[in-house]
Image 1 (tube, one colour):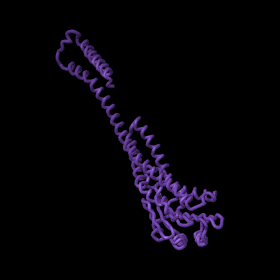
Image 2 (cartoon, one colour):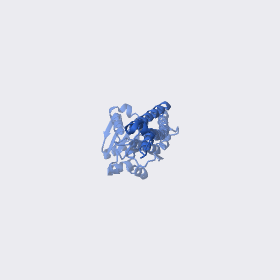
Image 3 (tube, rainbow, N blue to C red):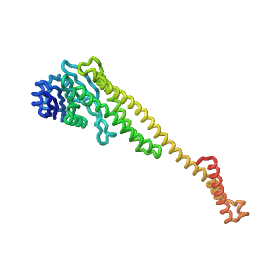
Image 4 (cartoon, rainbow, N blue to C red):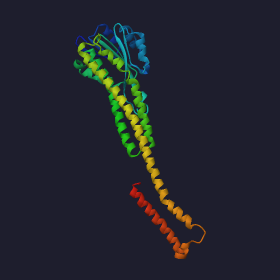
Length: 330
């Protein structure tokens, strides 16, 4: 599916027909943004002609649009620059299936035009297109402005994902400290996989953005270099934030293991106290359970000896509990 917005002789035109876009492009519009959603990783015949013949894009660049890879790319050609960057568009159950939330955005940038292609529906591009339609004077004033808005949204997607991870980690930390459960470890490992998946793609993204910060770049005017340096800086900050989250998730695992150990220690202490308290009962009952005549029978009689034995048990238990309490063992 293709859509385009471009300016010709001061008029803003919205078009979804590839043949019409091809004809208008040959008339040299002032500024053109084309977005192509490759459903089922395929281009229509008219879209292929637009990219290969009208724009003259290299066949290897077009082929890269069909088969997304998890690494960035910047390639210079005579009349355009081809690039591939990656962002995150969260889906349901993204902690369990995070790989499906990562998307690749390919772009062709030249003098007076930008073409974006993607195999998934990207909602932020829809938003940017609608803004361009509503406020063309602001959103369509230059190629640099469009490119910066796209880059900024892609890099911001990492920050939004990290916020979701922070919220999840805070909730897990509270749960682990209050009452650690086996399910908590599964959730922690899911977050760990997400963080490592983000780190795998984010660390190399700066390679693509640094190209647009160079002063000798023919596509970016000097006044816009500061905007792309800002994108590059944001990307660097994201990488630092991911490294911090990697350390935090390791600490959270340690907190979980410590909480489980403390909980197990409390259980073992309780069981030890019970076993220790009942030990005098076993000794006394074993002593009076022997089939022999005890001296106590002469003093208390048979019935009195039973009460005497029970009293010894109760007094011993109370004495031990008082002693344990003084020692603060429970």
